[in-house]
Length: 550
Image (tube, rainbow, N blue to C red; front, side, top):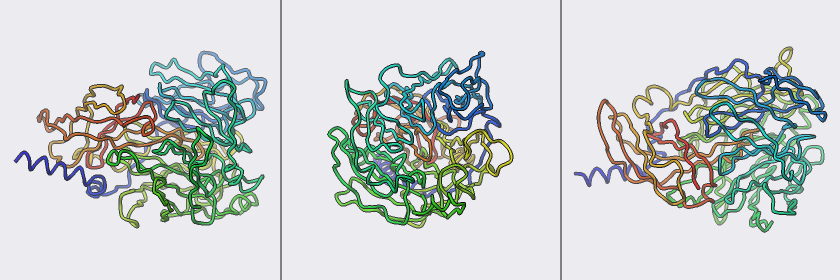
């Protein structure tokens, strides 16, 4: 009898994820206003290991709507708006208290980039004018005593405005591209190190006036090389030797996918079942070739509705195309704890830029990667707040998506326009947080044998689920994204290997299990750092616990 039960559990595990996901109907989900006035428009956003969300815009916007605390002011003679500014241009949102706290950034962060290092420090690179070569860092805290600092060592070797970042296995950050920057560099640098030329970035530029390859999409592949997508083309780069290992087929369709045409990209979840070897990218949206020129003339053309998937680790990779429920530009793509994808924010017509888009898309889309073609997309509940240019979203440890930003203006414009500067923060709760599902399936992590885990070692997770549950369990580790301009940098989700859960107790309507979980094999699969660990039961995730792979 015991053998039969173990075989059934093994069968259920082998069928995950689609057979388990299919048991749950997708519900619309719900929206909740979190903060009426965050004071700063969230142009950039990321979730930290201290269960806070850090957001910022640009320092030369003029006065924001939140004062710096403790009588502080920023005196910067290089600022083009206010050389003496007592308002904040960055905030920290604390999830547990639903409160925001002002932070102080000194130099201009407009259209910059970022990544977390192995110790959980947020490193933030580039920006505009006086900030274009700056490196800033933020060490997250839970006591409200942390703030931004400028790195006092060597700066960036080139101006990085609209560049993209990726954390690497050796804990360096690669910074790729930017406006008229056809090269990449590393943070931190070796002595005397500068930039490394990347002709691919010049080749993929539409024109000197409209580059269409800014904020390139970066994904670390399972061989340690870097996938770079710009405009409609992509390569695999050995960044150690500055060698293009592979050139991929051009993505079909009429139109670029990167800024300012502004589609979005994710690397689909990696799986322990193949040793985290298969890497598949998924790119959606963008604009037609003439979209920027048309928008500049006041004619807002429809965005692209097409998406492409490509297994970049295949010997002969090719794009598989499908359509979203509608056209979409300036949308954020986030991986949810159960491996599904949410596409949120954005517009139907136009491109990224000052007042260069119209017709906001108020409904997110859900995408189930393992479902049959034609059954993957779902339209979700609509927000009432348009999220246009400079909007952002991030996954929180409780499984909700926090959404902020939207400012298609060169400053804070709060009235007298169709799309005012948006200071409200809201949260979207996906279908898996519906009470019907959480009551039936919702797991809860009770304890971990360790939260600091060496690669390829095992750790124990004790968790509870409702007593009626008989379906498979997943253990998913998620690296949060640094999100800006529809580019969700560094996010990745790994489905970890686990032994058959063992019943520890069964009382008060909950069954407590213990399971041995195996960490990824190394830093290529999971760059060292902090991850949210979710236990997922039949597609319904627990609230995450933070763990560190090293």
